Picture 1 (tube, rainbow, N blue to C red):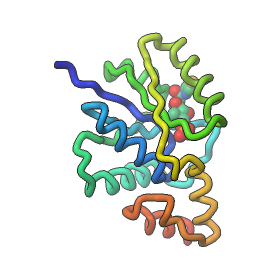
Picture 2: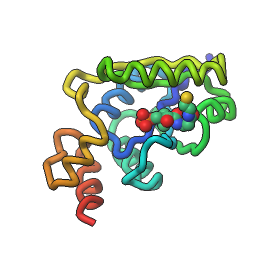
Picture 3: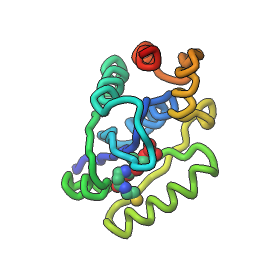
Length: 163
Ligand code: PNS
């Protein structure tokens, strides 16, 4: 039977407990989850692509989820999907405020690739308010980020903001 593969695109700058919660949920639904680090041109990044790959690999190395992998693509999501013969995408919805952006993105992507289907999962209520930007702001001012990101990457983030 054909494997059901889902692509989870995002910035992951840095990954948070909200991202990980979503990935773990998806890994129980799909045969394979590809975390895809992409470029959002609205954002300027703190961590290099290599640092983000390393953080995600470190997180999943120690966990039981064997069907999760990390990839990078610096182009359009639809081109990545077509190139790899994939068509299912995962995105997270935290609050109503996420909806408008996601709605615009899914319809634009669909216009470019009509076989693309996006599924939305909601993270645990503990993470509905959480974002990578807030984590960076807390880390920047020396606050404690250990409740918000996986333990495997706390020191990497702290180090980055000490530089
Ligand atoms: O974590 P983010 O920043 O909300 O993720 C947004 C991301 C990276 C998924 C989005 O910006 C994206 O798909 N970038 C790749 C370029 C692309 O395909 N843009 C078309 C969007 S309609």
